[in-house]
Length: 339
Image 1: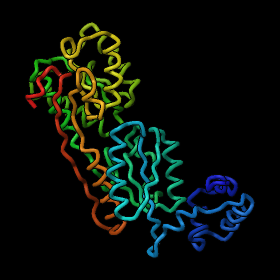
Image 2: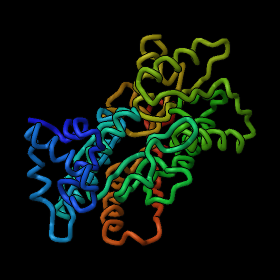
Image 3: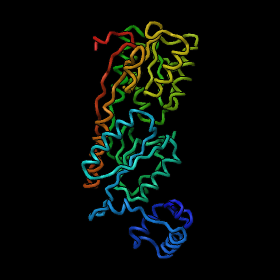
Image 4: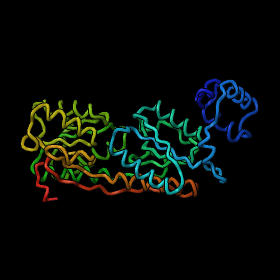
């Protein structure tokens, strides 16, 4: 069976143009429309019956796109669950896309969502190193709500956690437990979550009159492999830290893997903590001290904002900031009863 993308390639147009020919042909130039119709006939393309069936009288498809960067990350699975529960109560379906933090895949899925005439999209924006979004909002043609990450410079509805506060409180907790050299393994500087968590870490050090040693800070890909490599670099140095702060659960897994491989005793020889309270965090030995994010609530709030935006497209953008929670377990060296 042929696909929308194959029709677009044969007609040498975008997927969104094919969608307009199928759904609003009067919006397309006659010559372009004829070329697309010829491609449709040649490939025997059958339009999405599901999307057509779901379109209501108001012109809505009752389809919502959701683009996430890592489908294996349990944080995002909780966000998806929250959004899906809201969508279900509204009679809408979610098309879930995994971008793998790759701009090419992100653009591919944006085209698919346009092609299916999705009513809107939820996404944590993937940013270039320059801080610019990898998609031009002026060309996007559907409502967007961002979650987890902010979109610098663009006024869109956004739901985030107070990353700076969470990182500051975690770093402060380590300082209170006697740590003066704290290594930070963070995501790339192009992501707002990374810079905000690094800022919170620095704030706590400044508040305690401790120097910020930039050699203890690593900004890298938010992946398990990066956590492993950066933990190895930090702990093999001439003056290794007494504590490691991994700024997401995937980085924490990689760091924990290296610490285990190295044979270091946690927390006696090294404290290790993380931003994100994954389900496995309390099952590790020792159990992992974390900053818990309200991931499910983030998904619910983001989905509600998107439906509000679809219903009221001219309203002012809304920013929702959710509070994090410090979850003290064994890996930081403090008693859980002190929580």
